[in-house]
Image (tube, rainbow, N blue to C red; front, top):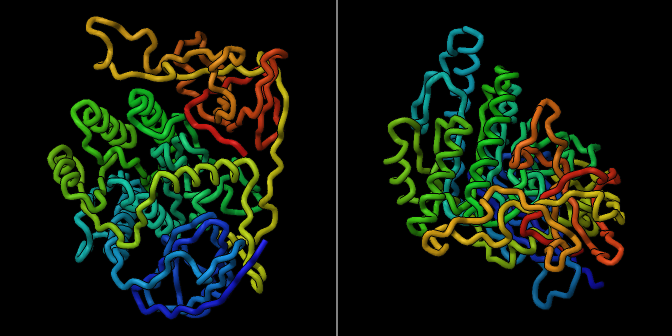
Length: 504
């Protein structure tokens, strides 16, 4: 294996950012040597190398100016260069607008907390000069972020959450991800939400929202996040919008239960990252589904602020639909947002699944000691997944709805659908064409013990406790080989299969 490495220094002026995009089989270490800097709102510690890999695309921003030192390493021969595929410094960033948003949301949190305690609102919380026209009622910020594909919604979510936890007020906002392509803290195809207590790190697209205790060693403090996860199982929201709506409302119910149990904690608010399909007008049928899912988010999470990222038409639509009852703000899109193609997203899904099973260690460039991932010292990031052979009868597997769900409009006139979009259909591994080989399955929590009677769609309301992949089917002996990040027994468990597959 051929390796090349190099060092470079960048001097950044105030309110500029260094943007980079990495190739495959490339690692990058960034060390802040002077000044102050941050990555998507997470502050860098001076003198500590931060590692990046797996085709990461990110930016180092500074409010006051800084100097950063870069060290690159490549694991194959590059004929003419030794640097990231793209790197440059920009003085045109939307960070001032995002910073003002944070201040507005911070004032909402302060007012909500003061109202909860029956205290007078601090004078600073009344000042809105040069701030966005956000909702300054005594409600915490409950924010829905909408925007088209490649608009930077996830980055904005991380900036706002990181600024909140950095505010020094002990806030632990909830971050919800209802974009199944992202997968949040779980796997592609999942919807998730979690209370965030510390900065969300960025080091790899394999962990877009940082690591969680469910899929990484808990020796890292950032892995104390315990997400609530539901399984949708597909990339496109139009595949089964009825199921998407139900899972969004389930997430909302759980978040509201948490808020009810911890009224003081609820004042930190919630940020919801959404799929690009929520911003795409694709005709009457799809558009109806899109609007229904947006409405589901607004109702489920009791949204009071909608942020539209760089999309004038969507802003007009949301103003018309919700402007009289909610605050709708159009915010700028960063010029550093990268256009991501389908092949890149497929590679990211592979990175995510591999990291979920095996953990992730980004190689440190030569000469770098004490490299960190997301600012945390590398100690025990390698997992030892378990590959077990189990009987077909040990695990009950369902698929939600028909495998290929044609739209109702495509059915013959007068015909009724045999399988509803949300009906669990039992999958027999022994049947040819079961679609289970290399399939990603979500293992569900046990049924609720307080339910006296089971109901047909109850498993749709069960959360996910982990993910497995079926790596081999031995139909004659009715056995299958299952790869899991843990060694717990699967006997008696229930799982759902979607349309995601993965091969190691």
